[in-house]
Image (cartoon, rainbow, N blue to C red):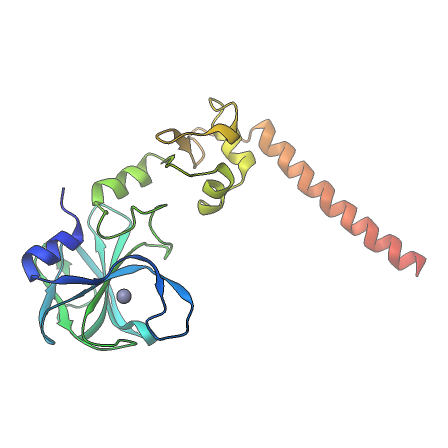
Length: 234
Ligand SMILES: [Zn+2]
């Protein structure tokens, strides 16, 4: 199992200068901000960064504070690698890359306090990877991404609560309940438990879904009739 950051440490002799996770704003706003990637330094400006994984270059471009960004989709996954703050691109959109292929040079484009690579992982719809922490490039593996994606299940971690899992997946508690009839109490989920967060392939609208829909329609009608009443009374 190789984590991307281990690749950069081993093959580039790079050092983690700022890890993934919440940190004080490096630009001095005094706020705590989420750092969605890992900063890699300890190499010279102009050093040629290469990709830890095979894949396809889906984008190169300049994006405000991110600077010059090369995006590489990891083969066999929906996961994008973002290489930020490059000085020069050494790949082009559409390139098929293998591990060790050039991406770009260590630079200072965008908001930086010095030359470094900001390496970040995202789903291809732009959302951050996994919760709570497997999206950390010091924890990530493509196998894990494929499991999370293909199995349609979320594996409960310590400290998880059902409503938060629902929120993170853009679904409702009612949907979790409908898709997981084996779970009798969503208030008592436990680490290691598998929760289906996508409808089963053969899924047909369940009674729970229909009830939830009816409830929403009723709420809408109540609001409308209240508005109508107010209009007529005024
Ligand atoms: Zn960074």
